[in-house]
Length: 89
Image (cartoon, rainbow, N blue to C red; front, side, top):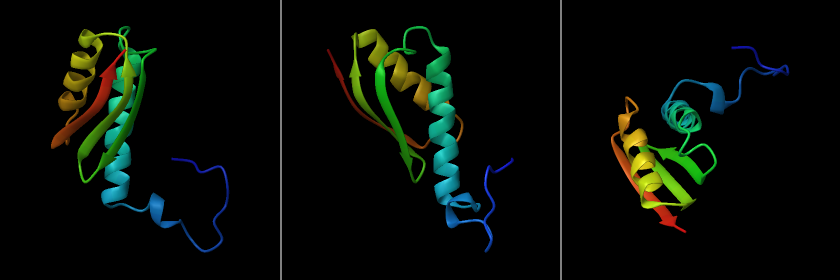
């Protein structure tokens, strides 16, 4: 990976291997899966991960979109739980 700036004293802790990096990767994988899905692409869902638990927050337009978001989050390898805080508009 290429970083756009120089860190004179080494990389900051966010870029080191560890739980924060793994959680960030999980969240990015979930976002990537949702962005590929035509039903979820334009929904308002915030994705966060903490200790391999994916947290979904926001609003969606249908119960089908909510179910699909939950299913996609569970389908990402490494996810141990999914906390859904999404409401249907």
